[in-house]
Image (cartoon, rainbow, N blue to C red):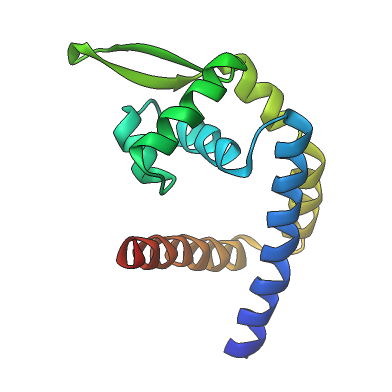
Length: 144
């Protein structure tokens, strides 16, 4: 059963990657730009260096990405509340709502699928997904 689950995850990851790529293209951004917006929307503002680390970019590549996102109105540079000499990158709330809205129909489909599972089953799914995310992030850090 474990191998079947792993194959199912792979079958799901491919269309998710394709879907995100399609949305990024529709938004006029790269896939990494979309990842950065997701990271900021879900983890909060970050310094340019921290954002670079979170999306696995060099500082130079991250600077170019941030500039693209600022120019397109997806994020803003704001003074760091702890050190006014520095800036943090924060997502634009309207842009986050607009981009998030592009996922509404897919999320509704996922909600319908999850409705077929009781609360205990959903808790198991959630536990696995949280663990899988942690293990994947560990693997990324190890290979970086």
